[in-house]
Length: 424
Image: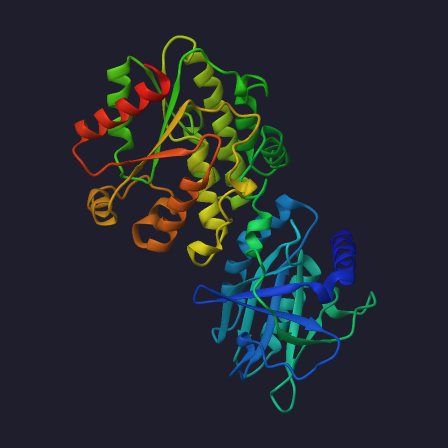
C-alpha cells in the first residue's frame, strides 16, 4: 500500500507540468520528439506513430528514491523482454521539461502488434501496482490522423483523479540534449559528498558498498597539494598508457599510481554490474582515494598516474548522451569542470591513436575490459564522443600526444612536456 501511495504522490506532482513535458523516442539511434496538448489544431502525426497499425504504450520510471529508480530502470528492460509477447518492440525513451535540470524520466516506448492486447496490458497494469513506473497508452483516431495519450492511474483503478486524454503532436528538438541536463551528480560526480551519499544509501543492498566507505579518506586529504608534480596519463584503451607510465616512472624516479586504486580491485566486478548511478559513484570515490595516495607519494617524489578524473568523466558523458557528437554538452559547459574538492594534477597528457592501429593492438586483449571499453572496439561514434569529452574537460585540460610513433619517441615527447610544464 505504501508503494501505491508513493506512486500516487509522484504522479500528482507531475500532473501540473504534464502537458509541458516533451517525450523522446530513439529509433535506430535517432531521437524523435513529441508532446501533448488539450486541443488538436491539425498537426501532423509524430514520427514514432506513423505507419503504425498496432498499439503503443510508454513506460517511465519515476521514484523519489534515486537508488531504487536507477536499479529498477536497469532491470525493467529484461523484465519486459522476458514477459511481453514476441510481437512487441521496445525503444528507449525519456520524458523531460525542456532546458530544466533534473527533470528527466527514463523508460521505454512499446509497440505491440500482437493479436490481443490482454497479455501486454496485464503486465503493464501489474507494473503500475508494484513498481515505480508510469504507464501511458496511445490510441489512434478512426481516420488515423490523430493520436491521443491516456495516462494510467495506479492499476487504472480510479483511486485518484487523472487528467483527461491529451492529443499527441510533434515537438521540436530541445536546445540541449535532454540527458545533458541530468549529468551532474548522476552520471558524473563533482564532489566527494554527492558520491558518498549514493554508496551510503546502497549499504543495505550492496555489502561491498560498506567496504568501500570504510576505505574513504577525509574530504581535506583528497585535495591536499603535494610538494612534487603530478602527471596524469589519459587515453583510450590500448593507446600505450601502461608502457608510457612505467617508462616515465623509471625516467623520473617517480611513484606510479593507477585509478581506480588497487584497494578497490576486489569490488570492481560487483559495481560494474550495477546501474550507472551506483557504478559512477564507486569510480568517483576511487578518484578521491587515489588523490590521497598521490598526496602522500607526492611529498617524496614526482607522481605518475595512469588515468584519473578525466577518464571517469569522459566515459560517463559519452555513455549518457546518445546520438551524434553534436549532442554532447558544448565546450565550456559546467559538466566539463574539474571537481573543486579533488586534487588537481600539474599536467594531464592524453594519448591518441589511429583507430585501425588501436584495433590491431586490441586484437589479443579481450580479457578484463569493462563494457564501455568493449563498446570502443566496435562503435566508432562512441569512441569519437569519448575523445571529444576528453578534449573539453578543463581545470586542467588535456595535452594531446600522438601515440603512434615508437614508444621511446613518445616517451621523449612527453618528457619534454613535463620538463617544460613541471620544471623537472
